[in-house]
Amino acid sequence: MNDLVRQHTALDDSDLEWLHLLVSEWQLLSDLSFADLVLWIPTLDGTRYVSVAQMRPNTGPTSYQNDMVGHLVPRGRRPMLDAALDEGRIVREGDPEWREEVPVRVESIPVRREGRVLGVIARNTNLLTVRTPSRLELTYLQSASDLAQMIANGTFPFPGQQVDMDASPRAGDGLIRLDADGIVQYASPNALSAYHHLGLAADLVGHHLGETTAQLAPSRTPVDEGLAKLASGWAPREFEVEANDGVIHLRAIPLKPKGTHIGSLVLLRDVTELRRRERELITKDATIREIHHRVKNNLQTVAALLRLQARRISSTEGREALEEAVRRVGSIAIVHETLSQNLDERVEFDEIADRVLAMVAEISPGRVRTRRTGRFGVLDAEVATPLSMVLTELLQNALEHGFGPGESGTVEVTAVRGGTRSDSRLLISVQDDGRGLPEGFDPQQAGNLGLQIVRTLVEGELGGTFDMLPASGQGTRVTLDLPVRAEKP
Image (cartoon, rainbow, N blue to C red; front, side, top):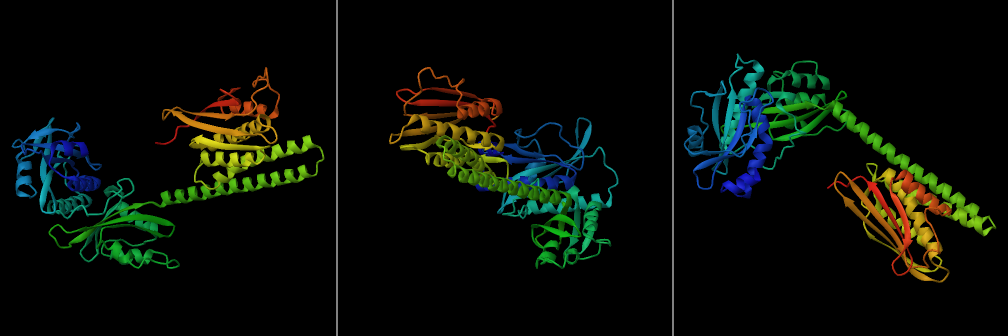
């Protein structure tokens, strides 16, 4: 719609915003009218109309099998559009049109904003299935007529009341028509069922909806002071009411077709099951976070016990082995600590990498600096946990074997995310400027426990590749190529 309006019309951004507000609401008008809606805007030179939006009803057959958006119509071809635009009134005169052997009643509703008519809504009703309307259908049509008149007057939609079309209740979910005093004149079967779910034993018709709703709210919890007024429909609001283990979402729409309040339209949806599932998900998320927190605590306890044991071993080799185990356990604990603070099983790995760098740097035999460039991005937990261990082993290996006591140098970790949204890869390098590899060293056959762990995790669990080569100039360069899930754009 933005492109069509800016390309063909003279409307400014504030007018376009009003049209977006209208389009966010007009599914309701379409459903209440049992009709298709097409929004026509006059072109910049005033000789044609361009259709910028279209809506089909959920409550009846469509009048348009094809998409009308983008069509251009010369002024004069559709006299009802001209009359609505020029005279600023709803035009209903004229005989039904025949489209593919289907009779269609056409009406034109001017779209007014701040005294100016921006365009015209063509309301097209398929008359093929016309029959004697029921009470529900008559209420729908009367409500549609009131809303159409408010659009023509420029009082609907309500400024600042952007509607979420997915979350807000629709006409078919449940509809209540109130008079000017808030007394229920009509309640659809779905609306009545929803209130019965809240604990209402009687009928709604003839009762004050606001007072009835407030009485159903549980007295053991604080009741919104404005609940009765909100449910009376005096202001355009959305709210929820919970009682008797039921939850309904309501939306009140004041009706002022001639400038004075004549009543209200209340749309409602029973969201009991939806809210129950949301609570279950919240409980599950809290449980998962608590599990990660406890795993982290247990791993830290294991690390502390290993550290105590290391202090009591006189053998240097045994003490170093236990200290390596402490760091391996610690790297896993860092991942679980991060997961315990998240709502899903994905983590921002850059923070984990920085903490692993700081942890391993503590074992540096000399004045060796560690740094990270690039970004790992967000990773799944099943990738983050083994990758943290791999990073720990590679850093530990570089510091222990690349530098001697008192030697200075740098160990740099570089990470690059690449690929498409459906196929992403993570390229990692760990490079030092230390002594370099021994002559004839084969990283794929080396018996070092740390490298065995790296090979097993990278190739077996992460499904990636691992290589270790002499760095250009001096030192050693380790490269990892891992498949990972693409980040959300």
